Amino acid sequence: NELVLANSDVPTKTLENVINSETNQFIKFQTSDLKKDAGQSTVPFFDAAEAEGDPNFPLGGIGIIHRGQKGFGGFLAFKIFELDLSMYFKL
Image 1 (cartoon, rainbow, N blue to C red):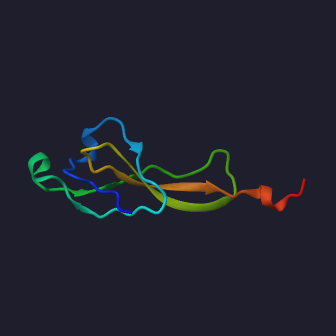
Image 2: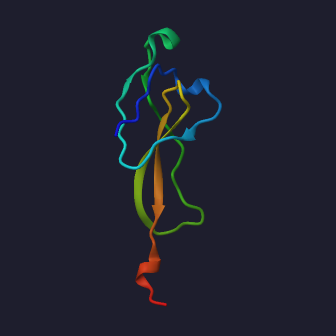
Image 3: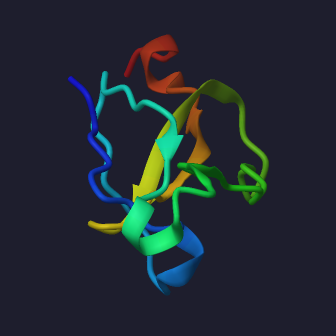
């Protein structure tokens, strides 16, 4: 299931980027739109924000998400998952 980035402008031109990817989707890197950006950028961009928990917690896993808006290339970012300890305790 591909997340298609049609006619994508550079993602830094939009103020708000929301998570718009779903589980088991993939995305292809491509050039930005020829009319919007002359095709001079590769999208999506990488998000440099730190992926950390506060307070610290056991790491259950890590994944990659896409954040963006329609018409923009968006950002790929890391998403961390907490370890579900409930399965180790019997109530």
